[in-house]
Length: 112
Image (tube, rainbow, N blue to C red; front, side, top):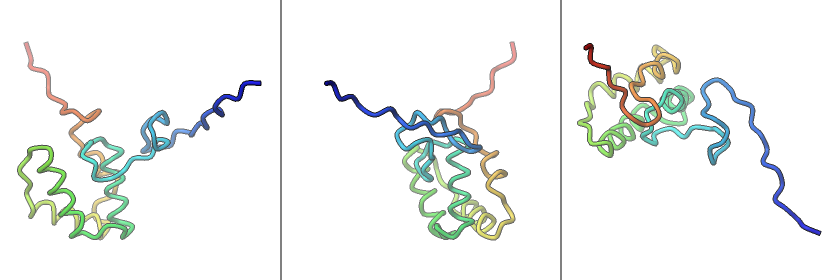
């Protein structure tokens, strides 16, 4: 009698989730540097819920930007962190600012 692996449990897709085929069942971890809309919204929700303070948000974003080779603007990040914590900037608004898609920069096509 052969014993196989049990069938993988399917996770229903929800708004703000990546496809369920990923290791963690489609959940997105914040501050991983992926810069997708779902990852940015996870960051915003963590700050708004109080799991991450505004100061901790700045520290993590600075580290994330340095890993990507960008020059972080601490003043702008501090203002964003305070806006997220206070609710002036929603997770959806913050996620819409994501300029990346699939972990890579989206460049505008040049007009011919």
